[in-house]
Length: 119
Image (cartoon, rainbow, N blue to C red; front, top):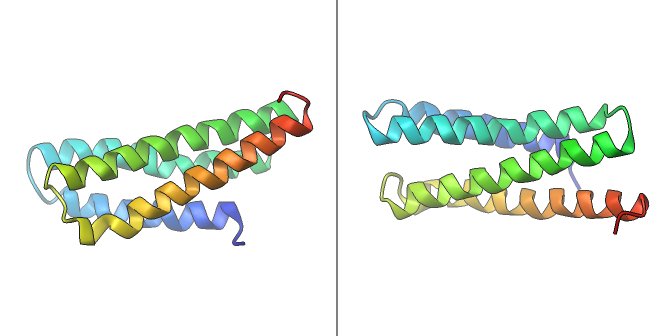
């Protein structure tokens, strides 16, 4: 499996490129782009920070934030499709990657909590 930091970085790059496209459109597209950009790039930033965590609870916290941001990103991508702002074919791969990242990050958090005796 690819390193989570590299995978979330590549995901962030794809989000930036999509938001660059969305920013070319006026109104709602631009506003949704900001939300998507913030959440989508935060996934990788928090996964990166988790690797340098000062403690196991800090590691769990950073990965939990990354998971939360992945969920939010998935939501915004679904909304762009459902509202007809972006065609599903254009963002389906990105939406699916957000779903996979949710599963991976969720697994990391659960495993870390189990190791700490928190579950």
